[in-house]
Length: 533
Ligand SMILES: *[C@@H]1O[C@H](CO)[C@@H](O)[C@H](O)[C@H]1NC(C)=O
Ligand SMILES: *[C@@H]1O[C@H](CO)[C@@H](O)[C@H](O)[C@H]1NC(C)=O
Ligand SMILES: *[C@@H]1O[C@H](CO)[C@@H](O)[C@H](O)[C@H]1NC(C)=O
Ligand SMILES: *[C@@H]1O[C@H](CO)[C@@H](O)[C@H](O)[C@H]1NC(C)=O
Ligand SMILES: *[C@@H]1O[C@H](CO)[C@@H](O)[C@H](O)[C@H]1NC(C)=O
Ligand SMILES: [Ca+2]
Image 1: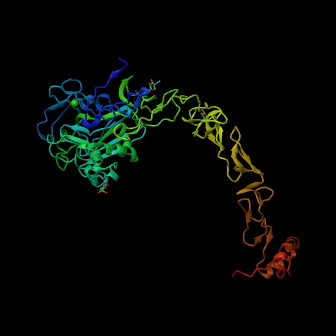
Image 2: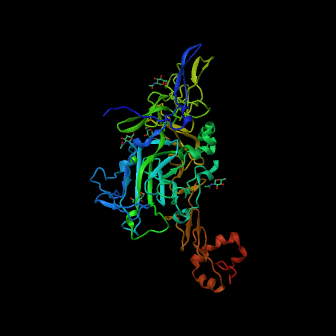
């Protein structure tokens, strides 16, 4: 297999010539030098590179061979699908082939012979590469468009999926959603997932074959009719959260939920006219390269950005080795028309000063005669950004130029003497406080802001008489008991006191405590409380 195969590039949108170069050699008085720009690959028809999978297995017609008719000619059931005959087979590849000589080729499913069980089919399209739509996705159905279907997308190579657009002849009935059209969308809701009835109503199988996911109409919301103001769109791409992501995907999935009916009802006596047939799937998109590549190649059967600006990775999503002076950033469409490259830069190329990749500026301090790094980032400090700032410690297993070399100490504010920690991340704790972050107490103490001695617990300082220890600070006593550990009985009536007085030991012990509080009540050796009832 040839290792590199250049894509066939079709210019789809006339204005796409913008951002097609990553840099150019300019000459100036100081000699020639490179000027860098944001750049992106040309769009292409991504159907050429997609992997198609249809589910469930056996949904493709022809095995066994089957007769079918069409909605336009429902009683002439002479057409045949036979997987074993090249002329009569309708395999999935026919959705992505290049048709020659006007011959339409299409994938076709079995007929709805199992009605009223639904006729369901999934078509999963995968690229193993993040792509960006640049124009409308168009799915061409022969013999009528489905009356219910969903287009879904994945941004993570098929791990998670989300709906992209719902299609039904009655959105409320099929999905409980009001019917919308993309032209109803305003700048604030252009990324909303809608249900549309525009592509599902029966108008005749020959009249309208296409189901569209409208990209261009969404661009028009910002760029105006005929996309005359693409700068406005590029500006929005930078500023509006989720806008670029809305047009990005790695996989698409068509969930076909009900075929064309050619009318309101399903005719049970002629189910051979109900099936799905797709002749083409048009996916105008470009490789997503974070504005760091002007080209995209097929390498080992996978699309791969040809990264510039000293970036690398399938989507140019990181800085190349040795170019990590600054942290990676995507390029920017702004300022138009050339954008900003945000190139990765060689570590240590700013004069003689080595800032370990945490700064790209140095200054010379005259009176001590040293060159020092300015504005060290990533929580570093020092002439060479070689130390960690206060409140951070060095991750000994990470190289010094690593962006995450300094780890936050995260010392507990109340438990620590200061925000510093040692080389292992241990903070300096106040008395009775322990833990790496000083957020725990010695045994016998508990947190009330600082560590204070426990007044009750489940061991020696257990609450008596069924009391409950709250936060190690207070016994909540049952009725008729009081005292720090609920060890004292409260009597409510004279006779309780009288009978209690026999038990002189426990009753007497109450008195010293009561004396300080209610001397006049302590004539008896137990406490009198006015009855509650
Ligand atoms: C289509 O995919 C969805 C989501 O994975 C799944 O729930 C459903 O069963 C699939 N339908 C068919 C017919 O395979
Ligand atoms: C998908 O792309 C990744 C990244 O380029 C590559 O490592 C992997 O082998 C590809 N997988 C398939 C199935 O092609
Ligand atoms: C989008 O917003 C416009 C204007 O605020 C509103 O008229 C339209 O109904 C909204 N569309 C959807 C699908 O919510
Ligand atoms: C880094 O980028 C510069 C400018 O594009 C280029 O001249 C140089 O060859 C690149 N180096 C690497 C290793 O990609
Ligand atoms: C320290 O750096 C190593 C290597 O980069 C990393 O695996 C580890 O998770 C880091 N430790 C912490 C606590 O962040
Ligand atoms: Ca075809």
